[in-house]
Length: 212
Image 1: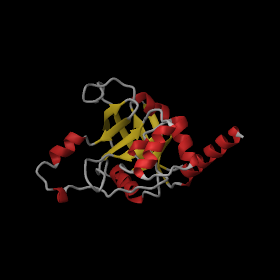
Image 2: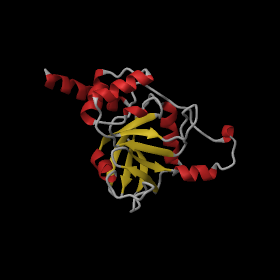
Image 3: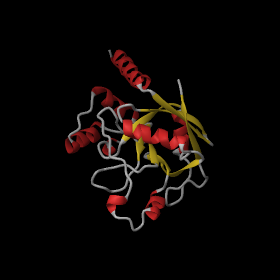
């Protein structure tokens, strides 16, 4: 019975990935991995695709890496703060949050970075991948009670057996996930960093849209 449940879960996960229409390839100096962009977060999907066309993510860098947490790339917080220095809040360009119950911070999830703002709106050119840690049932219970979230059986299985960062659900927009080559991302997450979480060796990446 347990084996049947696992097979059903894997089928459902694969079905979600196949059902999405947009996929991209990340090429890094550690190897390549593939990502699906969710159709149910259309504004973040389109923002990312437009950024690819505008070469925003051509020879970009993963500039903040925390093992057991995230691999972050694109514009750094400090760079954004410098660019926006002196601007009033209503002139800082952000993309409104797109929270969907199907999009959670499981291992390999692609999310949009943001600063502290009441709307939880996203930066335009900052992304991160979840390389989270082990999750317990107690962790999930706390998140569900605190945030009013109800995880499906499949989502609970994903968190409890694979790990992730459920505490970020409902606070940061998740708009895609790695579906092939996660081992590359995991390798990147373990590189040596300095006290500011910047890798000691530059890790570049480029992104292109693919058809599969």
